[in-house]
Length: 190
Image 1 (tube, helix red, strand yellow):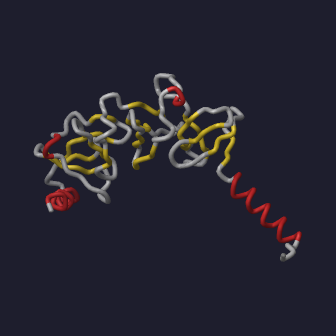
Image 2 (cartoon, helix red, strand yellow):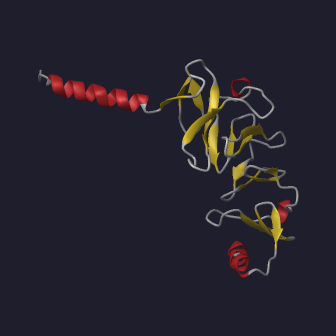
Image 3 (cartoon, helix red, strand yellow):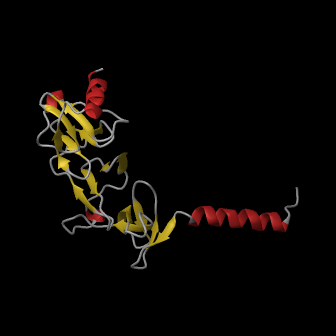
């Protein structure tokens, strides 16, 4: 049997501890969170999503953990941990619900999209998602003005979309003759 150098063993042990603890972060209330992209779990068993707080002098540098919905209900009381996934943009879902993170400088709020169908909910562009009934916009919710059947967007063009009624930048209908949006509209028709 090969003898292991004690210094090498110590180095390997320290590297393993560092790798394990790099995902652990402490929130301002003292809780320790096992943080990842999808769902963070505290040592007390609470669930949260990780977000960022920003200020004029420190843009997006302070990590915050959002552990309640905008209505005050805890994520742990609603979220199915085994199926919870981050879809992209500001959207998350589990087998029962769809969620939207309304980003803001204080870290934002987390809401359940009550009307959304998690079985058919998919990300369709940089900022938009769709289920069997509605089109959704990140940090906004149902995009009421969108014509569901003709709505088009795709990845890589930002929050611009098109339907039979016109071109939209986020939730605002824009002048479809503006040159910067004409080319995007043509891309969506291809």
